[in-house]
Length: 232
Image (cartoon, rainbow, N blue to C red; front, side, top):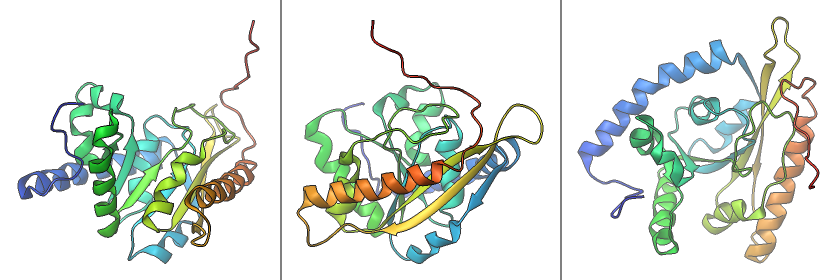
C-alpha cells in the first residue's frame, strides 16, 4: 500500500471517475451473475428495510469473481464498499481500479486504521452497503460455511448500524457439472446496545453464523470436495 493512500476521496474529479468506472462494470456484473453463474436470489427484498441507511452485508466467500461483483447488484441502488486485503491492489490491471469500484482495503499498518475507520463511517452515513466476507479466503464452490472470527463484527457494534447476511448455496445442476446457485438473504440483525462491545460483537457473530450455517444446509451438491488434511 503506497504512502498517502486514501480510503475516502473528496476530489470531485475522482468521484466522477469512480462513478463512471462503477457504471461501466455494472453490465458485466449483471451478465456474469445472471448468465454465467445463473444465480437465483431468495429474500433480497429484506434489504429494502434499510434502504435509507447504511448497513453491513456478510457473506460466505465461495466465488473468486462473483463475490466481487454480485453484491453490487443485490444492494442496488446503493453503492457497495467491499472490505478487501491489501494484496488485491497487486492484481494486474484490475488492482489499480478496485478502489474506484468500491474496494475498502484493510490498512497494512495500525497507524492507518483511524483513517480507514473514518472512511467506513462516512460511507455508512452516506447510506452505502459495506460488504464483508468474514471467512477471509475464498474456497471456490464450497458448500458449507466455514468458522470465522468474531472480530469481523466489531464494525456494526462500533457504528450502531444494522447488518444482513447472504448465504451462497449450491444445488444439483439440471445439465452439466457446474451447480446451480441460490443466494439467501437474512436480517436485519442488530447489536445488543445494552451489552459491552466485546459481548455484543460475540452475540452478533453467533447469531449470523448460526443463520448462515442453517441456510447452507440448502446445498445438496458438491462441485469441489474439501477434506481436512491430517497433520503428519
